Length: 398
Image (cartoon, rainbow, N blue to C red; front, side):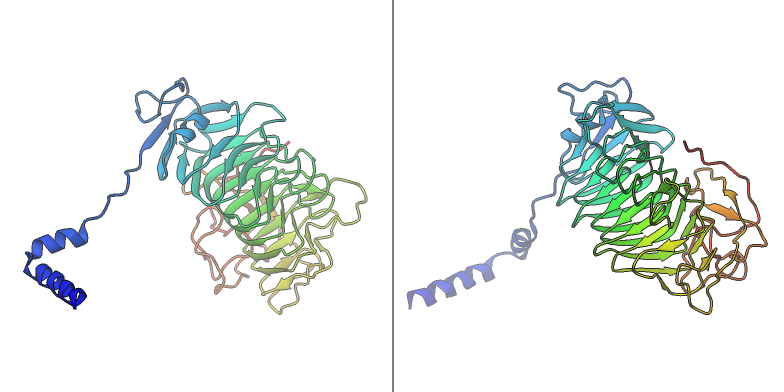
C-alpha cells in the first residue's frame, strides 16, 4: 500500500509542475566538446605549444597530432617537413595540407622510422591535400578507418611490403584522386599498396612502383574495389601491376593496366595481372601493352562482366562485348591541372577500339581526371574518357 501511495504522489507532483520545467528537464543535454583547429607551418615551434593559434603554429606535424582532441583538424601550411618520427594518429582527426604539390611531409632517412603516418585502430581519420615520402616501410599504415584524398605517396621503400600503403586486416581505407608512385625500390612485395582489409580506390594512378617479387602496383588479400584506376610503368617478377591471393576479392570498373614490365628476364609468372585469390571481376577494363605479352596469369581465371579489352587473349575475357587481340592505340599521359584533381590516366587515339565500347550501365560519372562520362556515344573502356582536347604532361619515374 505504501509503494502504491508513493507512486501516486510522484505522478501528482509531476502533473502539477509547469510545462516549461518538465521540458527543461527532459531536453537538457551535455554539449559535445567543440573541435579545435591546430596549425603547422615551416619555422613554427613545438615545445609546450598546443598549435591552436594560427599566429603561433607548431613546426612539426607529429607534435600537432599529439595535441589534438577527438574531431580536431590539423592544417599544414605549404612547405617541406621532415619529421623525426612516425606521425601517429591515436584519435579521430583530419590532417589537411595545401595541395599535394605544395605540402610535402616526409621522415628522416632512418631504418627505425617505419612509416610517415600510422593510423591506429578504432578511429576515423582523413588525410588530404599533401604528399608523403621517404618511409622505410610504408608511406601510411592503416589499422583503423582512413580516408586519403588528393594525396601523393612516393619514394617509400616498402620493406615487408606495402611501400605506399599498408592496409591491415580489419582496416578500412578509401583513396580518391591520388597518385601512388615510385615506391618499393625493388624490395619485397606490393610496392605500391598491400591490402588485407577493405579498400576502395577511385581515380588513382599507380606509376613507377617496383617490387622484387609480386605486386608491382599492389597486392590484395582482402576486399578491393578499383574504379577509374590506372596502373602503368610498374615492375615485378609477377603481377607486375596487380596480384591477388589468399581470400582476396577484387572488382575492377574502368581500370587501365598497361606498360607494366617484369624485373627478371625469365620469371615463372610475368603477367601484369596475377590471380591466385578468390575472385577478380572486370568490366570496362583495358589490359594491354604489358611485357612480355602475357597480360593475365594465375590459377584463378578472371571473371568478365563484359566490355573489356585484352591486348592478347589470356585474361578470360569471354563475353560477346569483350575485345581480344586488340591494340587499344594508347598514347601518353593526359595533362591535369589540379582541377578537379591531379590524376593523369593513359590516353588513346581517336581511332582506338576502346572508344565508346564500354557499358553505359556500369559507367562511372567521370573518368580518372573528373571529366564527365560519357563524352561520345557511349562510355569508353579504361580510366580515360576521350574528350577531343588533350595536352600532355609526362609522368616522371626513375
